[in-house]
Image (tube, rainbow, N blue to C red; front, side, top):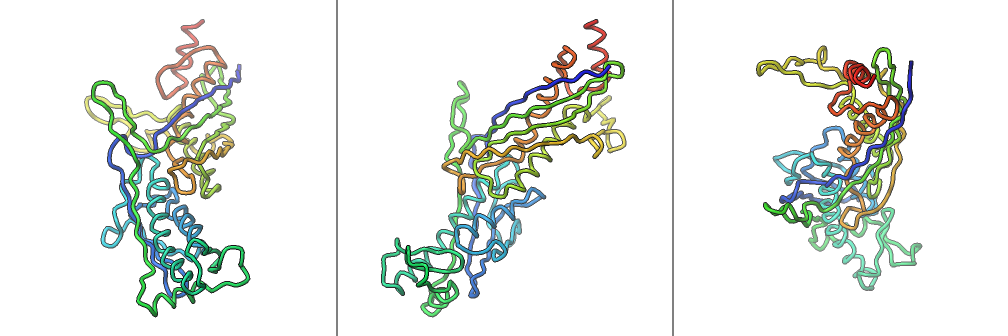
Length: 327
């Protein structure tokens, strides 16, 4: 007999290192044609930090995304970006790049203010154009303002770094302020349990994640779907087996992970609650997308068959054993 159940998993997650210095740096340089060199230390290992941070810089500088040329994680020429871990790069390296972009843009703003004969606070930079506020038709091309800077020996370059404002945890009380931003999420799992075989099948996962601001919504959805799949593996399949100090599951032939046939429909729900300290309000989403899934699945199993399995993964053997005890 197959029984269906629903379960909820909730989580909060501190973005970055826990109560420790957590800095990253970046450099931004305008080229003569209005394109931009961005140097940052963040290592893009597939999560898309190069794309997201280039978008942050492009938005700030008023240029197109493909005008930003990214050089990242080259220890010979880029500043330190810290580890690509703790879901920190969009938040921390993104902030560093945003500050670098603002410094470089300020050079153009001050030069344009001289050319227009106005205060720098009246200058707007957008769509490769520089103009006085509310006078978009009377503009100067970005390349022309850069050329004017070059003629005067002004470098159109900026640097920036960011370290979240945190404090360490007290050794006795555990109190402190260890993170600059927190991510929040709730996931709901819909599952079926076969009471004859003990097999658990996940039908749907509904995953709502507060990401601050979604710099790239498609990437955010991909992170949520990928993380939920990892959580599925943690909840139902993956187990490191050891015997006498040796790993007994050293390969994918023995260490089971979900295949495409095991992955359910994952419905990402992006919740945007901008965090003041983030670049355009953004914060991390990578690891938070993994955390609630296994708990949601375990709660759904309880909802379906009334047994609480306390250790992961939830294998058919464990399900049948608990059903036998219950009976």
